[in-house]
Image 1: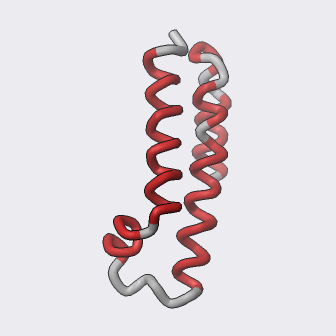
Image 2: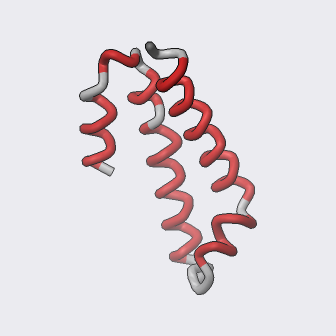
Length: 73
């Protein structure tokens, strides 16, 4: 998480887009950790593909990251 945050903040030429991607990334990791603590980690792909919060956060991260690539130039 810290390595990703450092990477995101070292890319100012793309505007704030990469920095904003830190929020869904951290929330995604937190949600996944909560699900693992509840005992849902036997099949990680099932957890990721069937939890709507993880999917929404993944889509949010993807959209923001793509904005960093295409809009932030």
